[in-house]
Image (cartoon, rainbow, N blue to C red; front, side):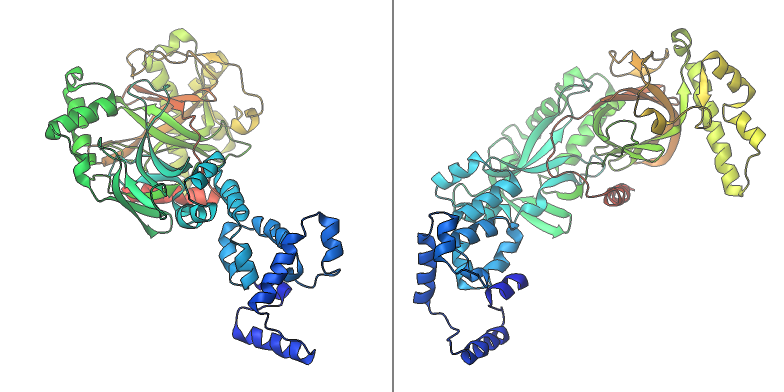
Length: 529
């Protein structure tokens, strides 16, 4: 605005205007332009729409300020400015304020900043201008667009707020029904904001089965907002809590209570219904980001759906941090809540699988993985003592001692970065697929899983008792199948989790930089620790 003020010769303060009048009085001119003269200039400029040459011939040969430019040229200039700067431009002078009433400026802002196209025509036909749409709806609620995690105790969630047609809608993303991990995500609207029925923005709660009803949105602080339902009676059903539970169970799990025979699973499902339904869509949301990708990443980071035994399918965020891959829970359960680091994979410690017949032995797999685990523990103890391993011991221990070296020669063993290249050297040309089969005795929710894999790495998974009691990291095997699927074998639990990429387009979700993303991860863990 200061630049505009200098160019047009008009300041914001009275002092600037007084200085202008004094300068113009010295030159024998009157500084105050009355309304008739301003309208004359504005009208004459509008009449010159015969092309750039005509404007150059009829207008001032050497414009001294923005006020000397034709209005249609000012419209083009102002259309290039971000919408957040336009209110300041309107404060410069009356002519600028008049030009900013032009619909072309605001229509372009709606299109470029919020991706609106044909929806603008529908709004204008309905009597809502592009300026009102931007000023009263899109601009005030721009800060809630993006990806969010609701505060629902240990369960968490995934919310994407987007401009969807003529509305701003908060879509809650739900995993597919257990155990169909490769099915597409489901989504359900929790709230919407629109200007369809009035000249001001209206917030509506979409929870329940009785249609939209009154709601409210409050900004608590930066990167955090809350929703409130003002008519929670719309969430109730005629059959009472029993009917609500059966409806929720069918939507959430795709089955009835009679179909669930496992008593422990029935308890977990009932517990989740009681806990989540008490909020009545009155929730607080915290902003989260998708992880940025680096050239050295083993695969594209992002969101994945994974199987977690009786807890069903959960959503995790896979990110890469140097030689480490981490999977953080966006949805959780009473044992390991949302926000916790469920998988921590050491990409410098690859595991070479034996032949298919030996892969079927859980003892063989345990021997390989636990050998790496013991090596990691020894190195951690040595680092804590401030001692270093001798070169001979390091070379021998890198492949798990003498027996480990024999396994490597035989084609089945484990290697650290010193004897097997890590992801940084293989990311440009992925290795050929190798046969893979789960060991006998390892439980899997999906009987159909990939039978070939690219690479395997040592990692740890987080387990805990109910209420996140006695959490500990237990060793396991991270298995990379392809660009969109990976798995993890939990040795202690004798269980296998299969993860499949979430392919939905999530708008306004990418992290500005790696520092902001890592700070978000630390905050997520503190929310549920």
